[in-house]
Image 1 (tube, rainbow, N blue to C red):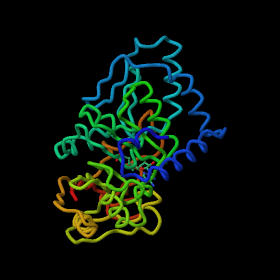
Image 2: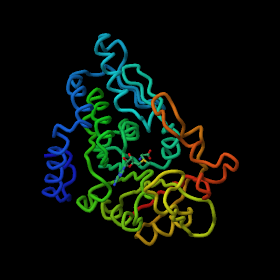
Image 3: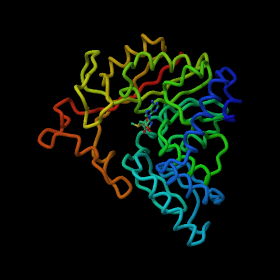
Image 4: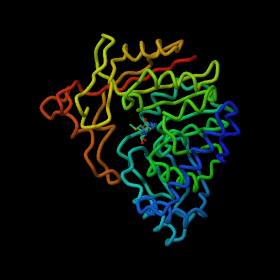
Length: 318
Ligand SMILES: C[S@@+](CC[C@H](N)C(=O)[O-])C[C@H]1O[C@@H](n2cnc3c(N)ncnc32)[C@H](O)[C@@H]1O
């Protein structure tokens, strides 16, 4: 039974337990793709970091001197197995992992707006490898539950937190579509970089609304297009080469979506253009990145000829 359920008394515990067990038995099958994460991790799970520094841009877990040369080489190999690293930066036993996204910049934009997290029950929807969850940890939340349906990211977080040993951070193989199982469970929900991947953003916002406790707070960030009109772009196939992009709203459109989903005290606190400094190829993410998604002749357009992406941030309560 997932132990995080004890902090979510209103959750549909039976359904969450069933789902959790199904997912665990699915990843425990001897599937080749999962074994390459699971087996080396099992061999290294006894390793513990002597230090944690979660207060700077880089999430620092452990020191080089914590490990023998053999174990350090094995951790390095495991970290390379988790490539491509999309979110970071991390330093794991002094192995510097420069991820595609400089996620500390998003965190810095959020930080002044984040309510007091002490003893709060928090969800991070689409948490990836848990970079932001580690950044939340110094604020002493009771629980941060990361929803992340992708096994690669799940194992990356599991490895990082097995070294870090933080017992208030959990990731389960859940998607935003499982939020209806968590009615009135969370004091704060982070939903970053998810909404434009949802075919029905209004349903997603309503599910976020219902998963918050009375007085709860949503921090949401989305890809956006520029413009004053409340409109959304609906790309033919891909947007900035990313398939599975459905609606890309203007800031005022997202404001209206939030209002019509029932949110109150809706505040847009940041809108900024994307850049190839913030999202770029590194030694830990060797595939195409932002500069390949944008029209080289006209950086105001994506490769498909759509308006280039911005990022918009809202805070809202229920
Ligand atoms: C664009 S990334 C955003 C990651 C992170 N929240 C951030 O803002 O940097 C989208 C994340 O959502 C995850 N994801 C994919 N499908 C999802 C779903 N149905 N529900 C929740 N997360 C999902 C992806 O695996 C990925 O980690």
